[in-house]
Image (cartoon, rainbow, N blue to C red):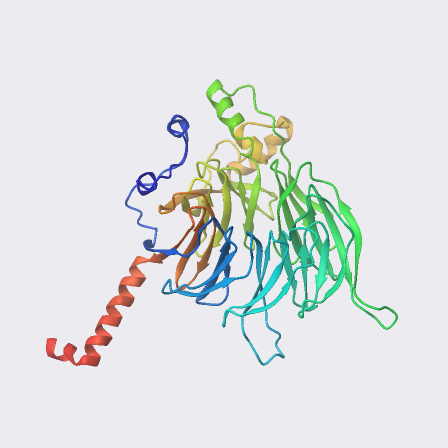
Length: 459
């Protein structure tokens, strides 16, 4: 109800009534986040949150401001002003182990074509670089080599003093959208629908300095790559605008597994469904991943999918986890998952195991779950036979956090201090474990009474 009262809303009324969205009542017994603090400091969309340590985080967004917060109390600690346009990337810069000063540093990139190094302990602007030819869209710190990379229309390598070590030629007008580090001094850059493998060559006695060499281009995606992450020591994974999930070998860069889908609505859909799907052409875009030792948890359009790395197939899904596109997902303890969406909602899920009875098999592709795509009937029979006696899984909704009135961009999880969410409504919300907070307040009260001697008088 709160979302409607403060001007939000998940969808136009006509579509919302037909939505198969799973709901949960007011009695959310498994949802611990029953208290919230609303934090106000930004004047535009808050897009980024980054954890600094066990009790602090920083927020940044389209107003160009970076704010440092206390995650326990919600206190605003610092406001960092230096950019003139929206912030496009933010990352922590770890201190050197040999360095005596252990101040927490962060790097921020902006549409004003600058990158700034900040000291989050003092609020001081350590250094600023403003020689970029295009907006920096992503940053990556390679701690082992003690360098950091910026990705825009080209790829640049910098040292800790912000000296430019080397850079590539112009790669693309669309620019690098994501960067990750892989073994053998290599990085993977997502550029449009291509993945480019670069090797970083350190200076030797016979060379003057660092170099960036293009090693290989991977052209397996059919559309723009929206997400790129390392999932373990053996693999990295990519997701595209048209719902392609590809798992790559981290050493030889070959395809280990893939779920490939195309926009091909089934003719069996009724008219209302066809209209709704056409109005949401991004319903299969893969915006974000998270993972554990066994599974990759994938945000596909409005849905959530659990892809098992060993079985190489989807083992559970919620086709309509939210009313709009899911923007961010993260693992919580106890087989729980949290997701946020353009519809302003934040939802908590639990991956549950159950003995599967004779029933239809879990489809092997995302689109097969919608009824799209081509299915090989002969190949599906043994899969069904095998699955009828196997353990199946489901994603069950256990919590619905209602507080934001616009798109929730991302969140952070603090084990001791709760959840932090940021939104296009310019707000940050700190969601607290109500039972834990109540216990802490009681403890503080008893401590205060004991200090004043009132506790013994009461007894």
